[in-house]
Amino acid sequence: MWCSPRACRTIQSSEVLIAASDTQWARATRARHTRAPEPRVTDTDIDIDRLHLVVQHGRLFQQHQPEVKVLLDKGRFLVVDLEPQVAREVALGNETCFGIQSLPRNAVVFETRRASGLRSEPRDWIQELVTARATAVLSKRS
Image (cartoon, rainbow, N blue to C red; front, side, top):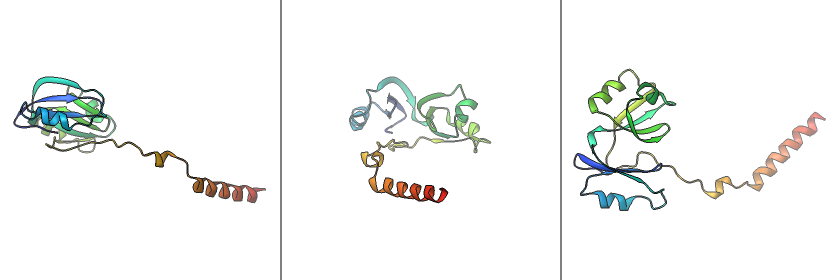
């Protein structure tokens, strides 16, 4: 997340949200991952103080606050546009349903890592152990 001073533009796709002031826009967009899907650019000014990170159980924040504009939705993690005072009021009494904090600047707040091929390939030694155990269990039942 890049943003300074207060007003910024956003660039958004299903995988990335970058917010940056006009003076930092070129730097911020160059820094984005090139493998990310082509983003949607929004030229509306957003006050950086209005950007909040929400961590929710299920969809409880969205169910309790359907009128809040969600800028990025990663399921449990949301980036929302919300007045700071309203964010504090909404968070009170809902700590077990969701948490709200000001969006940290110059930080990755959510990242999906691609699974390596090693994790998804079957391993022969594991299959041999499973087969041996299954054979032993089945032979005892006979």
